[in-house]
Length: 404
Image 1 (cartoon, rainbow, N blue to C red):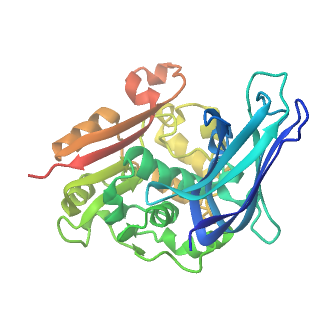
Image 2 (cartoon, helix red, strand yellow):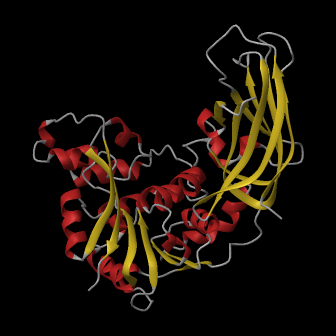
């Protein structure tokens, strides 16, 4: 049985000049969960010439995933924007699995248009909703938006890692290691989307033990973790895996948190990654405005680069006051004392130094993305810091492990 199936498709364009255009698509998700769902609409005239193309995704609907159930989509326009005549609408239902686009179903619909006095073409507005008995669209992470913790990791981080930085590489179907996996949400997103042979997430703080409850809260229709995904409470400085074992090694926001420096962990990551395997790393940059990891504290939000402008004693006092505007962290609320400890342990990573370390280990950069702050206002306390260190907020790198 396919993961998705078209149940009913109908196009209504009455034989009245400038009548509204209405396309209705009803479909069913038969698998437990599907990813990157899209609907395409192509209209051809009687001679077979293509007149219009439209997609649900191009209309602002990033349907990152849908659970099992029935759904309805509508493409609506005030008019068809077509000359009088006979037409054929080709509708296709799409999703992605293991990095590949799959056409799950098609329908061909004939309709007639009396004519239109408007020549700007068909520009439909799309709507999507769940049918009764199916989890409401509004409760899904991608619909709740970027402020949602589950969305940031299950949708954004998983797709950024595997597609944007690793290019949906075939290596993602092999063995993957995530160093510093936290609560495991990103690993869950990768495991479900790309179905690797093995994905192991390690983190000595065991945040991944909350993952089953997080899955329930996010309305994932899964009773257990996907096959091949497991977690271990291991230290990155002594990875318990043989040489050249993994095809891909990931590290999203973890290297800056390894107390005492990450040189040993970095070397271990290279050791367990096979020759010509892929590394994806997103290290926190200490000297950026967000590099202090204190964004939930009011004093840090009110003063840019606050951690570079004040003494450690002043920062400790402000942190331990505990004036926190907590963000959703999927049930994990750290204490002010923990925040202070984590701040003191941060490694002062910079882009130039990290690039040198990466190359010195034998990694060959493949894809690099930098996210910069809009503007840096230099105050007297910041004069000793470089433009790059202050302006670059985030660094993302994928690289080949060029072992001899």
